[in-house]
Each structure stands twice: as C-alpha cells, then as structure tokens.
Amino acid sequence: MVIKRITIFVIAGHIALLSAKCIKKIDEGCQKMGYEYVNETSVCWYTPATDSIRVGDTITLEASIPKSFTDPRTNTTVTNSAKFVEGPLGIGMIFPIYQAAADSFAMTAQIGSVLKDTIHFPETQLKGFRTIQWDRTAIDSFRIKIWIRPLSKGIYSLALNQQSAMDKDCALYKYFLKPGNDQHLYYWMNVFGNVSDQVAFFAYCFKVY
Image 1 (tube, rainbow, N blue to C red):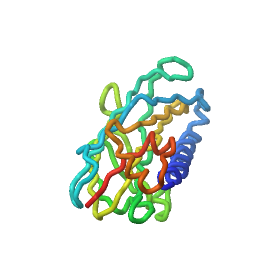
Image 2 (cartoon, rainbow, N blue to C red):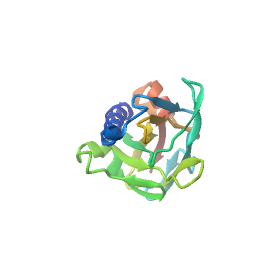
Image 3 (cartoon, helix red, strand yellow):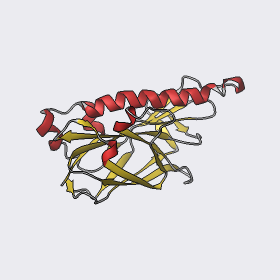
Image 4 (cartoon, rainbow, N blue to C red):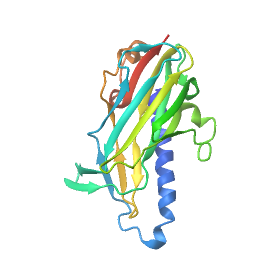
C-alpha cells in the first residue's frame, strides 16, 4: 500500500536523522539515550471537511501537539524540551493510478515549515512525502498550519505520519496524530477492498475534480 510503504521508509529515515543529530551530543552525555515517550491523543484537522474539492482549491491542515503529556507506558508526565519536532506528511494517489504523489500538490506553511528535503533524501524518495517542521513558539505546544493545493485530478490520501523529536538528553518523543475529520476511507475501500490498521489510523482521503 502507498501509505504503508511511504510510512515505513520515511519514519525510518527521520529517526535515523534524529539519531545522527544526537550522536554529536554523546560527548556531552546523553542521559536518556534509549528512552522513548509516546503521545497518541492529539488529532489533526483537514478543512474543508468535504470529500472532494476542485483542482486549485486549498485544503488546510492544522494541528497542535503538547509539550507536556502523560506517557502511557510509564504513566508519568514528561515534557518535550526539544528545539524542533518534525516528521513526514505522506502523499499518495490511489486512483486512477496507484503511486506516490507529492509533486501533485503545492504546499505553503502558515505556521511551521514544509520542506522538500533534498539534503537527506534523494529525489526518487521525495515523490511520496514532504517533511513537516513544527513551530515551537507557543508555551505549551508545537503547532502547524499548512495550505495544500492540488494541481491535478485524482483520488488521493494524506497521512501525517509519526512526528518525532529528541531533547538535549537524547530522549525520543513520538507523536501519532489521527485525523479528527471523517477520513473518507470509502475511497480507499473502493480501490483496495480493505483498510489496514495503519491506514485507518493515519489516512485522510479525498477526490480532486
């Protein structure tokens, strides 16, 4: 599946980047290397919430994730003091052609940043995602607001996959955001006949006409 393949590769790539950045700090002491904290209570919102839009119209993706939250595995309150949170926005066409489709959209960040990360990823792998960097200026949260404008017709899926950060002690914070809207998964079902758990959690589907 498009979303699954993009997710597996891109998450691995972003975790590798975080780990590489943390290696530079080892001489200073990474007191929490190997610690992982997970937040799965946040949601992202796509507007307008309709299941179809015209070519050239704009979808707005908005979300916020908390700096402090209760980690479910340890039942302790943790605070993400990292200077940045980032991760992939997976983009795939599911009809009429099954393919990665990041180049089928123009994206503009109103809050945070959206990057075509040609430094860390080759052009062939960037066909299926863009890197999202979250704004950290709010006291209690990281935030994004992204304008997404389709350039061609088709049925597409977006997936704000695992967003991650490492603090100065090398503790890893993972954020998993489920769409707060109706995800229009009947588009996925019509093409593939079933929906995996990963698609059901992350994917937001819509038609561009």
